[in-house]
Length: 244
Image (cartoon, rainbow, N blue to C red; front, side):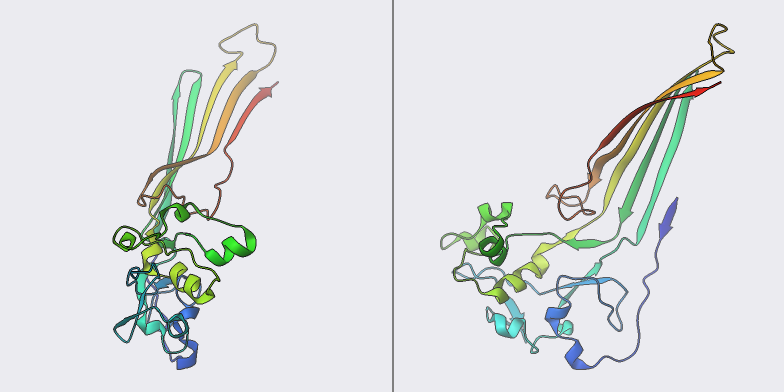
């Protein structure tokens, strides 16, 4: 099974006050006139400042003024259009291979041509909810670190607009393309035609391994694009099917 979605566009007019950049940055859930459905937008990234503050662009000028970056001065037209937030090509392939009484089945799924926003440290969540992130280890800590990391310095008290800008910036946009091994099933069948003394017509022993995991992904962060937190648990099942 294979499917490729066409890039549908929306048309019409949109009042300027509904185009505030902060309503679109980091999200693909809103439709926007003139752009494909499910488009992902992000703030234009200007790197970290010499003090570890994330920077963006306002009217072509580098700034760390988050009131302006998250305010009405910045519109969606100032954002970077990353691409589709949902897979444009997706499908699955599978097969069953049999040899005598042994049978092996498998299913591989794939999703291509889409993007997602990966998570990073959010200092507001760290202080309020004690919810950290592994990126904390790579945060800016001293002058010069801005040359090697994009993770902002630890700040207290928290400036919420700073977190909002960083988590919606293009530096966190990540390609979601991947191929997943969904399941493998193995079975072995005994029947009366081959074993005359078998007390039943046939017996089939089988096992199923489901949610096996990703076998290739475009991102280098060891992230599963389908699951923001933990992927579903792998399932291993065994069974017997008896026909009288």
